[in-house]
Image (cartoon, rainbow, N blue to C red; front, side, top):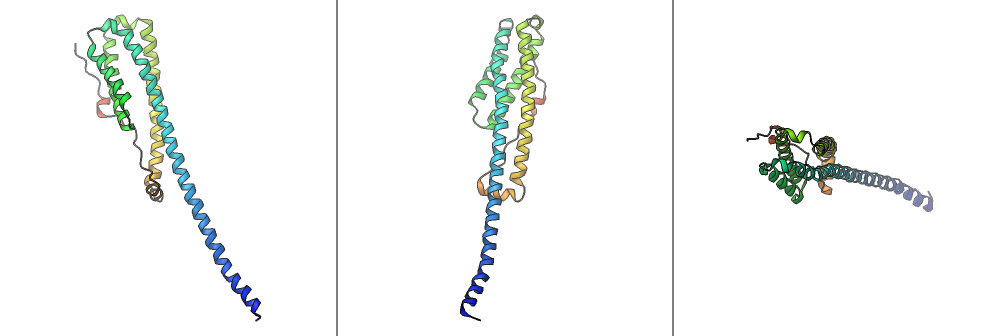
Length: 197
């Protein structure tokens, strides 16, 4: 065997494993990049879904003062109900985390349900056109909130499954992706408000 032929055979021997190693490294790198991008995309979807929930909450919070001012004159003795609504709005405005906002929205739902129960006891309000329109808008808003909460929870569930399942949990811990909080109503939300006169 000639010396040049031995050198070229030895070089060819090392080229194949090097190409295989580079190929494997590239595949692993692409897989890593795809996994990371998938987590980023799903995390952004969760944020977008929560933004939709907040949009509907804001609509509710914008409607409630109009409803309250429309009925306040006829129900001056119901200051506790109006105070509860004001406190709930303030609590939501001061909430910083999703958990705090969920708790504040549940407090608002409770105060709002008390207002609606009290309004039922004032028959003259049921015939006021402004109050009826506002009640209809508020009812529509509550339906929108329910739909957006459901969408949010669906997206959070998918994200959390990705974060908690293998091998996603390895990537999630490596890149700092944490499970997200789902919207859950508290036990008090299922109870009808008690109004004493």
